[in-house]
Amino acid sequence: MSDCFQRALVAREHRCLGFRLRPLAIGHLFTLYEIGSPFVAQEETPVTAQDVAAAVYICTHRPGAGSRSLDGWSARCAAWLLGWMCSRRNLQAECDALSEYLREGCESPAVKCDPRIAGARCGTPLPWQLLAMLWSTFGSLDLRGAMDMRVSWANALLAAHAEATGRVELWGPDDQSFVDWCAEQDRIAAAN
View 1 (cartoon, rainbow, N blue to C red):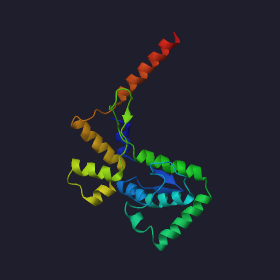
View 2 (view 1 turned 180 degrees about the vertical axis):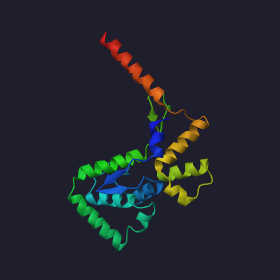
View 3 (view 1 turned 120 degrees about the horizontal axis):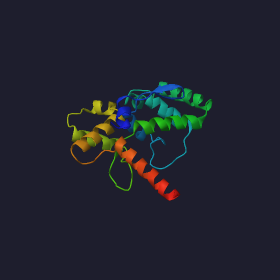
View 4 (view 1 turned 30 degrees about the vertical axis):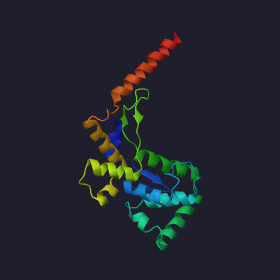
């Protein structure tokens, strides 16, 4: 079984600004896109302490709950407190922790989609595309259940379904071992 599937089943605990982040769900991604978070932006943008605080606030709440209360008084107080905590910490380290959380949460199984690219990853589609694929593949999914679904679960389910229907072939540990062995043989041949 691919390590990606194992990580999808048991999410590792992530912390940022001292808070435990909930496993990344599709609803979290929707909210991060909705507020224009630089952590999910297509182009690279500078990250501020307020950006980190907002992302932590969203990802420590149940999907959807963070977005409903983002404009409320308590959210502004929490954002101020989180921003203050950010100023007392190493901002780059907190950004790295949040980026690792998002990278791991959005991880998808490697597939054999291009023979020139060993274990290429097709990546996580945008959240609305992910929802559309889930609904078209597993029709009986309600919106709340879809928004609460971990992104890694959705990616693993879609990859497993695509392999079962013959649309892709997943990259496994044996494939990686073979590529590593070939690379070692090439190094040996080049040294001689």
